[in-house]
Image 1 (cartoon, rainbow, N blue to C red):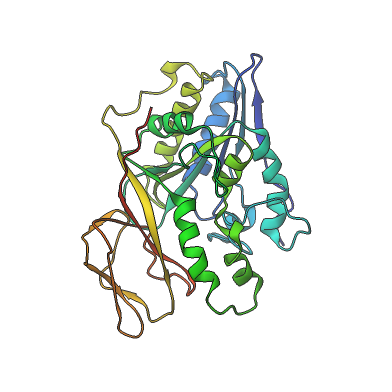
Image 2 (spheres, one colour):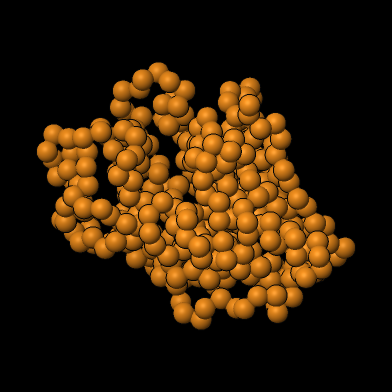
Length: 324
């Protein structure tokens, strides 16, 4: 039986301040943020943490169906094509009908995730200030401060613009007629929690806290929540040690490559942020055609078992963005 409700916790300070939303388990098997949020809730309840101002809304398990099934998705990927549904078609649509108003009501979102491969935590930023059609935005500096405060060694920008580059190629492929295929060809398919949040006037980061089962990931997520609340003036600065003083590496996604068929294979077991050089072979298509790196940089989100017609890997290079 599918879960029938979404559990939401909210603390409202007696002094006016920012409205923060902290979420986890948007993908059901990414659980490091679940325990971290529950720990913060318990400490606010006990008085170990004292909310100074503003409101803090916590959703420890955004996708309870996927979480119950111990897998990334329930009926589909909640972190794609996120918008209030006109007529709900699946479980994730029903979650979206509750989640989207919460995102729209918040000022700031910290969305906690984890990843499959080995590696260190990293944060994902939105666009720079712009008034374009894809993702207009006006909080570049505030979002940069948020990304810089959480304690990662690496920050990545450029998700939605890079995804849009691959959308036309994906839409040109034959569709099997399924709703999932139709969603993957929809211009809104690249929109997840953070993209929707920005579309409603807020700012946010996706924080990848480590490998799914890394025992250090929940502690990292916990400290990131506290550092975010300190940054926003919601907790006393003594609540958590400051972020590391070293300047994080800043990268920009610039290309996405889809896996065309089950026969497409990597030439080695890549991990996110492995270095690649221009012309280096990354993989081989089913017909034997080599897949080469178009420039020096890093491979990001390699997925050896990606479904045909979905993202196989991304490419990133150094960014010239300046963080506050």
